[in-house]
Length: 204
Image (spheres, rainbow, N blue to C red):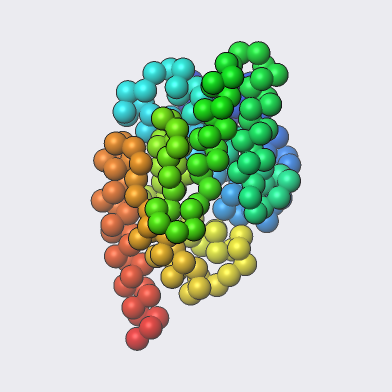
């Protein structure tokens, strides 16, 4: 767990959930893998720290990040409500989180589900912006192409079919947090231009 490089590596709800995902997730989840969960955990805390969130809020973000894809253990479609319920149950059983905190984490996880029309993601809780930006951070990072290829492999589609889908998602997506806009907006624009150029080459 040391590779997570956050102060939340000693939180049992985080460490135990990551260990569970390592052993229980289907190994054909090439994108929604335990490594993705660890990445979202790291990234959400970095974004929250950049925007000056307090320690308790960062703890709640860490728990939400750890559980946000846990529903994949049971099923792939509509996995978010399952992960949200798992998180709330674990928080309640720990006795260290209020009902309001449990509901906040649940809502954060529910908000990671992609919306089919309009904005790609919608924040319905005060902490959702940082989790959502961490979840799709690869759109605005150097590993954009690698992650797109992993998702195509997971979905069993060719890259030539994945690229238009990704372009459509990027057109509907916007960063939710101040830190997300600051850190990822420029690179996302570059990635989108590169994607459009590749699509143009394929269609010429």
